[in-house]
Amino acid sequence: MPVRVTEEQVKAGRASLDELAEAAGRDPDSIQLIVCNINPDKDLVRRYEDAGATRVTIPLPLDSGEGSLSEMDRIAEQVFG
Image (cartoon, rainbow, N blue to C red; front, side, top):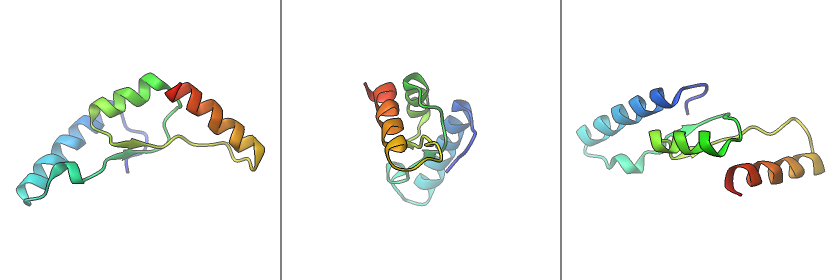
């Protein structure tokens, strides 16, 4: 799970993973590449996806209860809405 990597690094890493998987007789699509702790930005999420990431994680503030729920709603609107 890469943290603090660029889209270019993800793209290169995905290519390496795909080559290694194929050499081992494994389907490259069966290997997920998850990028952690990126900003909640729709364009940024798309760029990582285009580079080969299958998932991204977006950090939440260290809050509990209603504050976290509100933040998740805000992030969902920013990224998906």
